[in-house]
Image 1 (cartoon, rainbow, N blue to C red):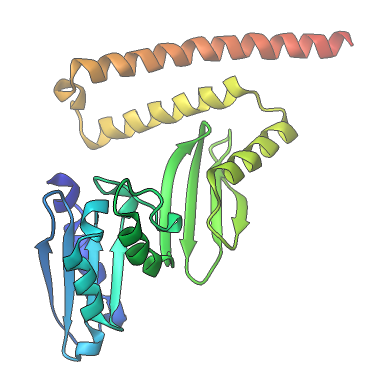
Image 2 (cartoon, rainbow, N blue to C red; image 1 turned 60 degrees about the vertical axis):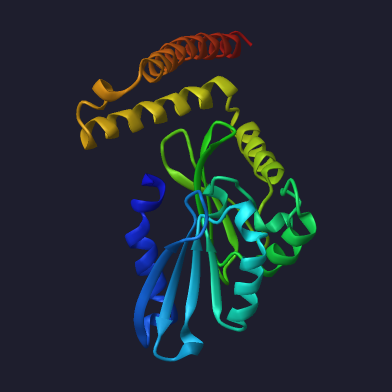
Length: 247
């Protein structure tokens, strides 16, 4: 429920502001599946400015005949799929239904209509780098990365959505050009994790009291691993520096 209820006001506000907020009468919200999918419908004074926003639509939902019928009835009116990659059964529109386990023909029929990803924002740890994928139509896709100094840099830009392999290759190129070792970036990832824990402490003091034993154990293991990797990395850097001095 939290996955839907927390961002619901923002989704409703987004829906209301479509068409620049013109001629808005109401935004009606309804649950459309047994998971967390919702339909947020913008009712306008001019029916041509009606719009529908499906939030967290699942694979099972989008291939249902009722959805196909709904899309047909919308005709030229705007329909948005929001956060498909965070839904209970994730799918990516650029795969044209190939990530559906069943009903691939129906999936292609529906998903192919939503190839245009007008706005995209994803922050994740990728290849042990804090990585952000961003796109705002009609501009290009941009991949940002946080370097070892915690500075955000532009890694690459592309007309099409970069694949995981393309991002990995660019990051590898970046690492090799600067002589960055795997342990160094892993150590930074663990520092990032610690920073996030500190932010959680400030935002929600005493969160550990409500954490499970497994969560606390995992956090402790991560901190111990980080300490060991940091020590190992220092030893390797010292050995490399001594070797360079002796050469």
